[in-house]
Amino acid sequence: MKEFEFTLKFSLADDSTEPDAYIERLAEHGCDDALVGIGQNGRIALQFNRQAENALEAVFSAVENIKVAIPNAELIEATPDLVGLTDIADVLGFSRQNIRKLMLNNKASFPAPVHEGKAALWHLSNVLNWLKQAGRYSIDESLLDVAKANMQLNIAKEAVSLDSSVQDRFYLVGV
Image: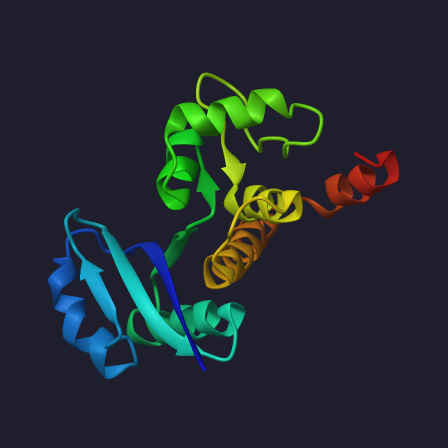
């Protein structure tokens, strides 16, 4: 078994209920390996250090435990996943300027952002894979596994609202 560190953020159906009312219930339903953040009404975040065979199992078992404890909770985001340059630098222990220079010097091969604007966003797993393939960087395999699992979970969460005709046409066009 390996230990995986990740955070799950949920919205609560009844934002008038104080989030701390859920803490005992979460512990009773298997979330005793998480720090619970209750700073905002209607939201709850759980930072896990979960042991499992793989990252996907760790993340999904945590989601399942939360959904048993708080059935109406809706997943907002699993992290780490979407990151900006500063986030990437923090994860790797580099400066933001170093990561920006790396990106600019490797425009052809650096992963394309998911969102490009004033602040660009990438899937962390894509950047970590790119760095790993470059062979010059030591990448924590546990972090890479969690980033891949969280990306899959976040994409699956969003894909639920995708119209099937749009998805079919997307694949026909080959975007």
